[in-house]
Amino acid sequence: MSNIKNEPRIKNPIVVAVREQLEHRALWMYLLCDEAKKKGLAPEQYAPDAIRRCGLYQGAELRRKAGGGDSLKGLKKTLFSKPAQWMFEMDIKQCTDDHLDIDFHYCPLVKA
Image (cartoon, rainbow, N blue to C red; front, side, top):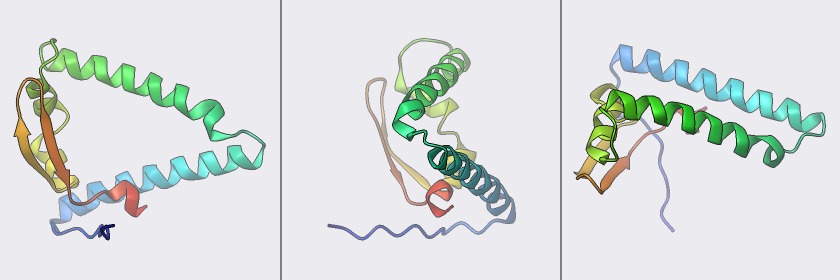
């Protein structure tokens, strides 16, 4: 088993500031879920439906921005833009219409 290291290499102040906002959102989400659990709501009772709604909503918007269609090249341009690549320290390994291979080297959500 490999040891996952989640340490950022990019230290640009703007990137750091945006990552701090992402971390704050992740903490906020965790605390909401923790409070729901304390009140007897199991995450599996509500989280899958909320995640699905978010994915469908954002997915439709991403497809629209990419010009419609099912090509992963459009997804790369809209979701995995240069700023996103900096935030998550992504390496785009391969991108075709049918295949998108990305290595993520840092995640501010995991850090939070």
